[in-house]
Amino acid sequence: MLKRQKALTCLGSCRADADAAFLYTVFQVLGKNRRYQNWMNNFTDGLYLMKKKAIIVLTACLIPAVSIARDFTVRVVHENYREEGEQIYHSVQVDSIAGNKILVLKGNNDQYRNWFREYMASNNTFVAVVPDEDSFKFISSKVYNIDIDSVHPLKKDQWEKFTPGGATNAGMDENQILVVDGNMERRRLVRQVVEQLGYAPRVFSSGKEAYDFFRLQPEQFHMIITSNKIEGLKVDQLVEKCIRLSPGLPVMVGAGYNQRDTRQRLLEHFSGMENVYVKPVILDNLTKSIVRILRKKKA
Image (spheres, rainbow, N blue to C red):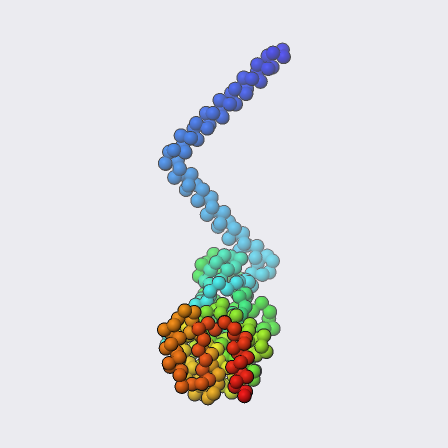
């Protein structure tokens, strides 16, 4: 009896090995079959797409249940802004719980738009308010149109006074420095330095917007810090327009790293203006540069 059991066990093991060898051979043959490989690839891709769609649908279904359908926290990756005549093209590439997407900022509230762009210069997170019925569209779309009044900072008290009816008094501090730069990261760093020195930075990427803001209250500004690369208005035009309104106002102009021709051109252009300082790199010893220039102004 014992011998019989051992024989059966041995036979079963041999069969298992034979089955395994047979399956291995079959998969080897199929693996070399191009039609089978294509089928498997299509099958795998299909499963991935089904999983992705299921996650999107599940997210859209669950969000209203927890009462956060209208608020999506997003992180700024890159801002695009340009003006063509009276037409404004403004979009922000963001990361969100629904993935990477582009928010096209519509609407005519230019005053709030200017303030919000200044906010984004030093804060890379904000809230997009989406109607309940558009939640699925927001989640599934790569590009989503949203009104400028429907985006705001995380803290409500930061933006309530800048909504329609309350924005007119924004930025009326008497201790201001105008910052103009087309580079978002550099704007953020310059803003930090200005704030550490106890001044109120007014930050813009567009020279035209900066000048429109400046001309309303030129006497409130102690200084202008601008890069050579700005939107809407050439840097020499911006500087000349501002100095015309506020003669003697110190202006620091960044020519750009390793831009010798640009630096030489700016030096020649502003050669007769003692209050205009051209630097190769704005951020190089910026704190000391600001302190030195403002002390010279007071002397």
